[in-house]
Length: 359
Length: 254
Ligand SMILES: Cc1ncc(C[n+]2csc(CCOP(=O)(O)OP(=O)(O)O)c2C)c(N)n1
Ligand code: SF4
Ligand SMILES: [Mg+2]
Image (tube, rainbow over all chains, first blue to last red; front, top):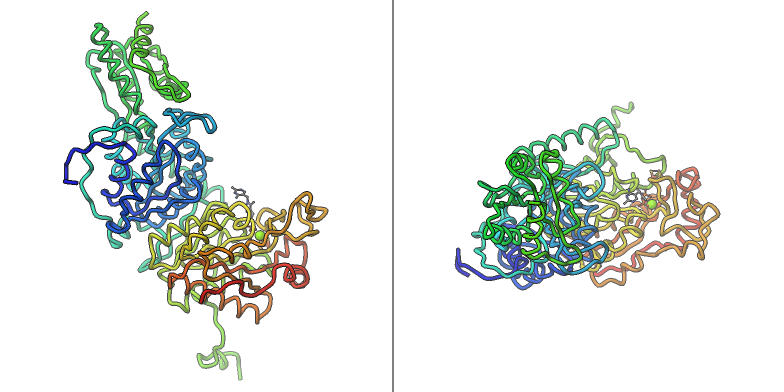
């Protein structure tokens, strides 16, 4: 394919191609619908013969996330992908990565739950992703792509953030965007880092103590005072991320009387609903969080000043709505609309909800 | 002649490996872990791999192995060391990568990771300290606990109907195509220690030659968990552990 060529592909395929192109060193994953195309695409592309990227089909998601922990601990740009039940299994590795401050990318192409649930799309893992998910006090950065283009673009962005802050990054997608085919321009080719570049970027990594003292990658500390200091350090890092890395997009908010907050595929549906509302003369706008953690609380609070009502539109039972309520502190009524079990709401259903808000 | 006269380079027959630092070890007196640490330090030093080794430590009494051996370390979640080592080695093929694991870590919670890393033929060495008990958590039953053996969670002795049978995971490992070297050793006598060291060296060398996975089991004591003196524990190991966990090579694809 040519550089900057416009291609038609699934979100899952775009992630695989983007990983190869942005200098990813390794992918470790276990098949699960609706994201198996990521590993399948990598297997077809054979990047180990071109860029040298390692690809392993692991024996479980427990193994894949620990391979990511191991690879990240040596300073490599490594990733995994899965869907909801698999990501539940990965929480052990993610909390170890958070504790030991290991960068890495985890893609969650969500499906409906709980349990084995359904292979149809959902946004039911919002709480799991934005509240840490595993044991202990921690957060990970959560990016929510709303298009195949963003699935591709967020791979490199995730690695940049993961290494800037030494933190795991979750790309929280869903079955709609993973499976949907759209136009995409793949990111430009970027070579994998050389060993020297890697050692310079990651002086903390455990990769053989050439010309330096030994490095230990661990999340263990039995002295409670030292452990509290480490926790305080983590919290300070999270504070810095909250200050610097909030990302969101506004759509038709200038004159909006009503505000929809939606992320990922829900935001695509909401966009259509807003067009329908506007045609009816209802002034509705949207704020689309791109980072779910850190959450764009301040931006929502500002928009809430001039809004008569806020609708949190999610493909779940109402999870992000709690963050919106926390952000606006009761200054405007906040509603939720969502479907579950793999049902994706239609724009008309949302128009209906907006009209209810008006009453 | 004074002691000072004797301490001369030409009289030197033994010294502590420099990779083993002076941090006081937290292991109980007589514990096999410390001897195995020393052997690993000696082998890495003799191979000249000090700057190119990454150890993966377990959850178990050896969790702090990283405090004693001056190489790079990654501390694994309970049982996951082989998965970590798999990625670490594939991403850094020029590095020596090994895991260090107890029987609970390797043969219980981490059985899947162990079997699959060995079966993939990842070019890693697994050092497996089998003391037939969960030392770190206070002496509970392990998958390797012998029939009739008493622990905190089988206080009347291990019974097949309640607890199943002691797992010979090393025998299983020998059947896997990915393994190139599978052996069972001990470190309670000088002759055994020499053999165990040679086994660790072979496993490390095979991993650097890209021959596949190696498993070196060290049948060990846990005097605290077994509620015995170090001497009694050594005797008990010879009398009870060795007949069930027979020493020697199970596989060598030289
Ligand atoms: C997920 C998880 N489960 C349980 C534990 C508690 N735990 C710590 S060490 C250990 C057993 C270790 O036994 P073994 O692997 O035989 O090592 P030893 O201490 O005997 O050398 C257990 C159950 C833990 N840390 N993590
Ligand atoms: S409890 Fe057992 S395994 Fe742990 S240090 Fe003591 S003797 Fe060694
Ligand atoms: Mg044990």
